[in-house]
Amino acid sequence: MAVRVDLNISLDGFATTTDQTPEQPMGEDWMRLVGAYIATRTFRERVFKDTSGAGTTGIDDKYASAYFDNIGAEIMGAGMFGLHNFPDDPNWQGWWGDEPPFHCPVFVLTHRKRALIEMAGCTTFHFIETTPAEALKQAVAVAGGKDVRIGGGASTVREFLKAGLVDRLHVAIVPILLGRGIRLWDDLRGLEAGYSVASETAESGVIHLTFRR
Amino acid sequence: MAVRVDLNISLDGFATTTDQTPEQPMGEDWMRLVGAYIATRTFRERVFKDTSGAGTTGIDDKYASAYFDNIGAEIMGAGMFGLHNFPDDPNWQGWWGDEPPFHCPVFVLTHRKRALIEMAGCTTFHFIETTPAEALKQAVAVAGGKDVRIGGGASTVREFLKAGLVDRLHVAIVPILLGRGIRLWDDLRGLEAGYSVASETAESGVIHLTFRR
Image (cartoon, rainbow over all chains, first blue to last red; front, side):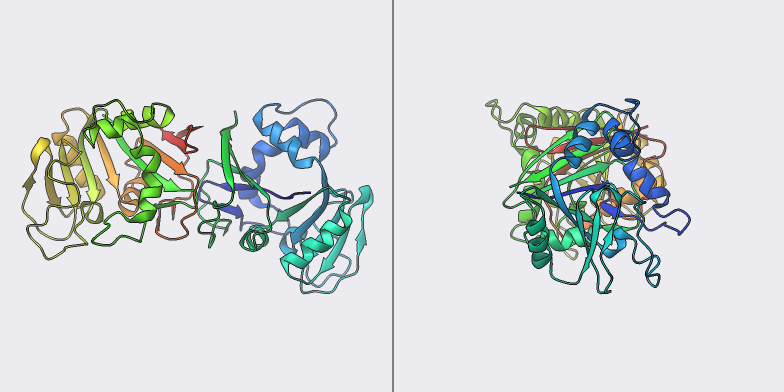
């Protein structure tokens, strides 16, 4: 069992963008951040249900495939679920569609009390208010020995990193400068201690960097 | 003739560190930032005058060799020269030793009027107060058709990047998190437009990323 993070960030370190609107929930900047990832064959198969075999098959796809492998539970911030956008609608089920791409229990960290949501494809959303360490315990308990992913956003991931709870951090660094958003790396001086770090550049220009312990 | 930048930055984007003291002018963080660069055979030969052939010869050395190649003039900020540390000493000749590693005219951007300094090894320090574009004109005029380097620090480089004056930006991204210092990437949203971007990872773990136009 490992606690894993996979995030796309810009060269200037922004993992969460700020140009979202209700009509375009991810924003243009976000599309640029994840463009190479969305273009992979694995993403097209797993998320878009495109079984034509279209999509890239290089280094980006290797990471996309690893992304979906062996996750037993996921933890995310309220913003990643979408709570901040429709905070007062108790029927709002998040941005992730009728069949979210998680296929496992998802723990959403929030101060708001909300009832459990069960979605198609075995995704369940549990809304909890607790510390990173305690949330992780709950996730591990239902992960069936598989890995737990800290899904995002950047602030949530940073809290888990600062608490020393992450075993493997993979960042896909996209060589663009966004200049605004939420930075992943703030206040993480010395994070590299205790990790080995390796990186490789994909055909798309995306740099895949992995901290492992 | 190209206008070039070569900088070492941390993963969180800091190019200039803040733990310098008069006794340790570069600081420990700076040593970590440039460690792989200093370890190259080229740096040892060119800066330390070590002709034993010791030093690394891989990808880091390829960039170190390119760093020293074909520079006809250099522009730097007052901090990189060292003016901020002994601002009131008219005899202070900067951090760079009796024979600075530039071997060309160096233009130091500063509001302080200072006389030209001629050092051993053909380095001359010219203190000028002007805009990036005007400083570049002066540097080009004495560069003899060779390239002009914007040496640093981060704030000076950023001004030249924002003014659209840089043809080739090479950053050596060291996979450490410093958490403090001066960021290279602030306020450069969209810089990648008009450049092609390529990267490769050295044996040391340093990621060499180059913007070219």
